[in-house]
Every structure is written in C-alpha cells, then in structure tokens.
Length: 130
Ligand code: FES
Image 1: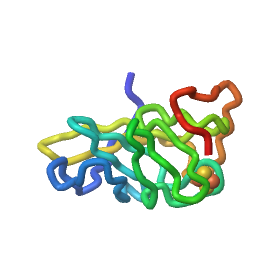
Image 2: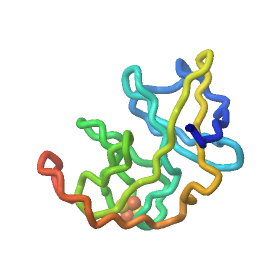
Image 3: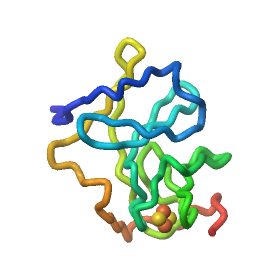
Image 4: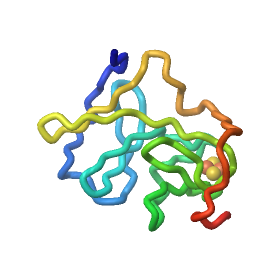
C-alpha cells in the first residue's frame, strides 16, 4: 500500500538541466530534484548535517550530490551519506505524469530541518573523504 501523497512540482522532465539540483515547491514543502539521464531524484532542500541549501550544491562524477557547505556527499537515490560522516538525507519518491514531475510525501515524513543521524552507514571507499 502506497501511503505517499504526490504533489506536482510544476516542473517538466524536459525543462530540467542534466545534473543540476533544482529547488521546487511540492505542496507547501521545498525539495530538490535532480535529473540524471532518464532518472529523476527528489530529496530534502536542506542538508541533514547543518541545514545548508542542497540545491546550491553540485553532482560529483559518480552522481553523488555534494553539499555546498562542508562538501559531505549523498546518494540522491537513497540518501546514503557516501562520504562517511553518518548522516542520511531525506529522499522522496518521484513520478513523471505526462512529462510533469510529482513528488510523494508522507503525512509524517521528516521535515527538511530534521537532523537524521544513521550510525549504520559506513565509509564508501570509492569516494574521496573531505
Ligand atoms: S551543512 Fe551540508 S555538509 Fe555540513
């Protein structure tokens, strides 16, 4: 059973620039969306470490989103903190309906400003540590 409520971002797939985090409003909540090839990812607008705006970050050559403030890296598909600091970025499911991008949010999903510490994550050897 899918409990997510999907909100339009009023952004179309073809209007997005490749590998550029883009801030959108979905319902009353800000989020970042990212186009990589045929995929669209959606994640929290604020970094789980100290709240920097993730849409001001960039994508590294391995497809990880880099926070602009302290340069921690996150997998946009699952929020995993691939540079190993132990945080988890909130991610959202995405649907593309007639080219328009919708983001699914749970009624009680974590707020962007929540700091989510996940000590089960480990350092990813293929990522340079900052
Ligand atoms: S605020 Fe994003 S890594 Fe520190």
